[in-house]
Image (spheres, rainbow, N blue to C red):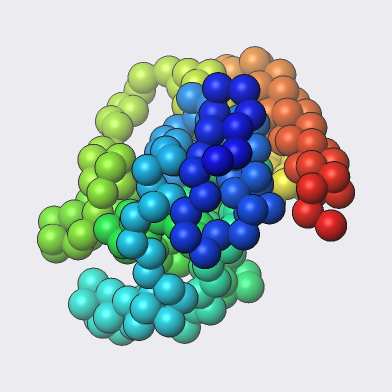
Length: 240
Ligand SMILES: [Zn+2]
């Protein structure tokens, strides 16, 4: 049993100790109130002992889901099972340019399948992140009876008809986009928000109406860089 502060994990079968340490640290570093890619599901010690689909099974599942829910129209993706997605603690991610989906190792079968569907929905829409195009896709999957779990099962299109954009909404969108594009600029992040969520049609107009967007963006970008740095330091110390 490894212990660190208030978090402790037993070592599930077959998981190397350094990986357990990495998971523990991941949990300690970042289970924030963020609503972005999969981090709504902080993983618990009990997840680690569940049955686990291997990469071969997930690749088969990708093909089956593609046929069943997309009529075989999604392009082929490589599927990797990884010990850590990013230091933010996601359960999966979809790297569209590389045609690669990563799924966190050690998830129970139903969560691994739901995460795979979540990432396939990213692959199916043009935009990054969890904006309306992705949400529509998730709602469509739910209606089709796809096996979704947790918050992936309860995606809603929030109606933002004329309602002002909140800092929280903008922050969540910036966090989303930083996962795929850590070098994004303020303009890029605003463009992404407008494309996926709506709001004033131009970047200048957006900043006139929501001048705090600059501060929110800079804060998130700084925090993201610090997390990257902590992760590199952690890996240098424990994972060499
Ligand atoms: Zn996502």
